[in-house]
Image (cartoon, rainbow, N blue to C red; front, top):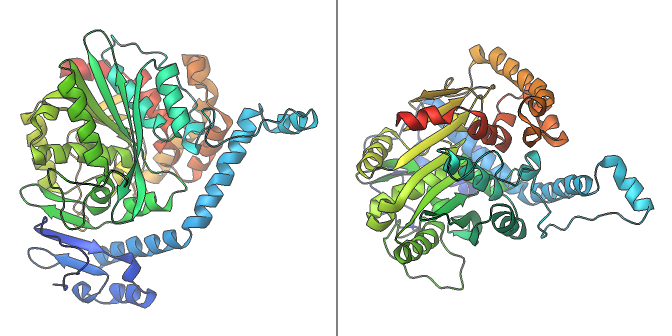
Length: 472
């Protein structure tokens, strides 16, 4: 067993395996591949029942995880700068009506320059799917909250001005806030969450939407790729990167109550919980839903986990549903069993949406080395948005030689569908040039475009979800 680090008291966990990429040198990483002595590596800190899994497959995953994290931190600033440039270019093209219009507008002195803080500025994710209105769905529909959840998940990627305008002007809802939350381990405010209030007759609903992984944000990618884990007593082992993003404290874990300097950025779990505590206690008719896309989906279900841990009776009574889209795996089999029991005990609806060949729900691996498991109902949609209710999505670990040809064929069909979907289903489903380009990339790398918001939103609107809802 490795010696315990003095920088963090982990008494809140009964077991853990932590990867510290900052302490790893390249030669150390090479030794991981050639030697079984993981516990002697200063960048691997562990405390677990029995021996730490030291098979070559597990050591290879640790090698990859640490190597990619080190590379990401090395290129974090250039990557962020590149992302800013890409977003500015995309918005410049969009605001001026096309690539050729830029020159024409410049010559006329009417060139529109994008402002990253303005309400009409969109992120790369937002430019893949520019829809703002809740068209095709109304509050009386059974799948209203599901479609609203996906729209909120998509909106959470945008800047504050855009989010506020979307919530108030396009959705006719109350904007509660958008919060940049602190990650103690990264020492940055790298977790974001949107909260809105949907008032309707005698049914008010708070919508809590966690932002997912931003394409050019190295910190987000490090959170995803960090395969460290903590074992929480009576719960199971959970993904360390996701726990840190939600607000895990280094020396305390998840205390029920905390004292925090108001001048510091909030911790995601606690600021959301306190807002909901206040809002729900003042409004007896209000409930809330929690949602997120990608990394945001993992944080959404993990938020519910900590509510269960703390036995937050008021919030659990009013938690109407958890809807996640393209969510990665969060914990092991023991954790999955714990969550199944608690969701059933508190009658909380949990729906995990997976579109076609999306790679993210198939990570981290569900195998002996990685031990991560999905749980709950999976609503799986094929490229035609046809629904299958399954326990686990097909090709659960993605990388399979038998699935390469079918996945490539699906990517080609999705590319063809880009030209036809607006004619078949109306202008609300029209796809732009950026998404079309992304789908071309998907022919070479199937599973990447499938993770985008367009197909998840289309699945909620076009997929026969009502059948599943009526069956519950």
